[in-house]
Length: 221
Picture 1 (cartoon, helix red, strand yellow):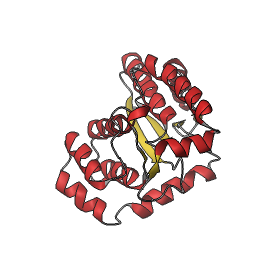
Picture 2 (cartoon, rainbow, N blue to C red; picture 1 turned 90 degrees about the vertical axis):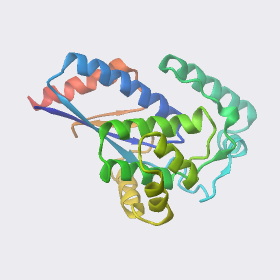
Picture 3 (tube, helix red, strand yellow; picture 1 turned 30 degrees about the vertical axis):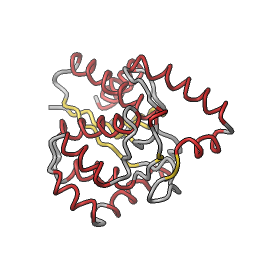
């Protein structure tokens, strides 16, 4: 059976990555209806949107106002994101977010899910849950206990996850994975690579992602 391999560079505090993830979900739904003979393997790759974020995080709104030029510029950005999110079923709740989290632990959790417990459904549920926790519910996804709770909600062993996050396991792997982005000239996310042949940068609509999937398979035949 042929396999469609998709690498997704993403950060769970990136709103466009949440939109891109939902678009990918829809594109995969269309793909599976069209190409049932092809398996799909999605690999989530680490990217640090703000690599200098303190380990304990930082106040959310002041950071963004400084980054984007002030309250009005941030209001306009959030409005654009709200408009982009609604067709994908996302109702961003930026007002609930108090802390911009350091995402190293979240990336380590994703790494663990993809290596220690590599069940595609668990991984997919975890990715969705992390985005939703941050952007819909304002939970601190930089906190190990919160991450362990989210993992448990996705069927993972909470105590095992908490023990894992208490140490440094997976940290080197995540940092090495994140270092691949600049080597591949990836400076923004989401970034999709299909069968190591075609790439798409940004939260493209499902139809465009589906077309890239089709082209990547066609290139192999």
